[in-house]
Image 1 (cartoon, rainbow, N blue to C red):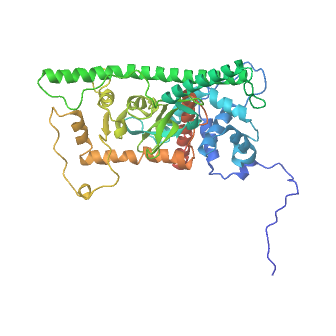
Image 2: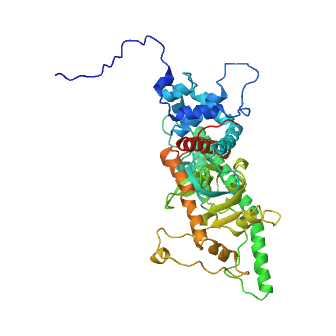
Image 3: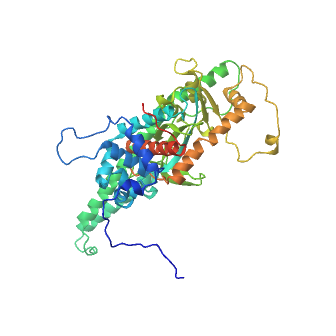
Amino acid sequence: MAARFVIVDHDTPLLLPPDIRDWVPADHLVHFVMDAVGQLDLQRARVNERGTGDEQYPPGMMLGLLIYSYATGVFSSRQIERSTSENVAVRLLCADTHPDHDTVCAFRRQNGALLAESFAQVLEMAARCGILKVGGITVAIDGTKVLANASKHTAVSYQHAGERMRELDLEIGELLAKAEEADSKPLEDGLSIPEEVQRRQERKALLAKARAEMEARAYARAQAEQAQYEEVRARREKQRQEGKKPRGRDPQPPDPTPGPKDQYNFTDPESRMMKAGSGEHFEQCYNAQAAVEVESRLIVGERVSNAPNDKQQLVPSFEAVAAQAGPVKEVLIDSGFFAEEAVLQIEQGENGKRNGGVQVLAAVKREPHGRSVAQLEKRDDPQPPAADASFVEQMLYRTATRSGRARYKLRQQTVEPAFGIIKEALGFRRFSLRGLNKVSLEWTLVSLAYNFKRLFHLGARLVAA
């Protein structure tokens, strides 16, 4: 018997218009995105109320298109435009319409308020589904470096900028002297002395602007650190007056001048050079922060900073937790966030009283990976520290008890997998936009897409408000 094959006919046209919904499985992510976006209040969307110009695409469709695209690893506006023709699920979402990349990019850039409001509404949706517990939650806070839309090779250091400016001055003087010499050797064809002088003057002006910006940053940094310096110095002076010897060296006053290795990037000046990977190399990055609820593993707070480390990020990242998730009961952080002043500000509030019973569990120092045999052995809880024990000793006790170890272990099981999913499963490793405000907007969109996909995989059954 001869082999038989399924007939594949590319030439016979369809007799009736097909229903695109029949081409997408009923349990597909796109159906969940469409249904969930349909329940959102989109009043914050920016639309042309005057009715002038071309017809607009509905905000619900555009928002759903962005969320679905980011949830499936498509971030470029041109790739999103292409998917509206090539991807059946996207064609279903767009009802076979095709917004171009300019429209997609403009909607994403102009609707930061809509994205923030939608992020909060999705958390309310998760609470109605019974997936997110409201109030008394435990959150794990961490940060991850995400590449900026700029190359580190377009950056210049403060020292190199100064050296290059001096070199340009010499080159400009050499060219001007050459112009005055009647018998000087001519330049290559197509080059002229006035143009070469102007080119170097423009480059010098850019370098001068970069150095001025780095000087302004250094001054602002010194002003921000001055209060902490005064506090530490006063505390050490008080210890001396009481007859106690302060530990360590006296603090040095903040330096308002830039360091020789301070960087300025010409493509995205608000991005920073940061240690990436295992800390063995540097990349042009932003510091993306997230607060993840430990039971649902939903992102309940997000923000972006251009600070290269997390030392000053605990308080603003804690305050970024959406009110829709309810009061926070416990915060889990690693040693990179630990600072006594920040922890006390969260636990006590600005008025010095308990801030709703919030407790912070933090690693005081970096621990090596793996556990020793002594750590594997069953052991009793240590004795509580004395009433006058230092804050570091008190924090060490919190994470040394059996219950404290179990609670703190939730941090690495919660926020680090969320970052892993965003970077590996979604493939989001570089921002498409530039500037801190626009990058923050895009991180909100990434967090929103992550939460949508998380709810979908948890089998959330949408409940109308």
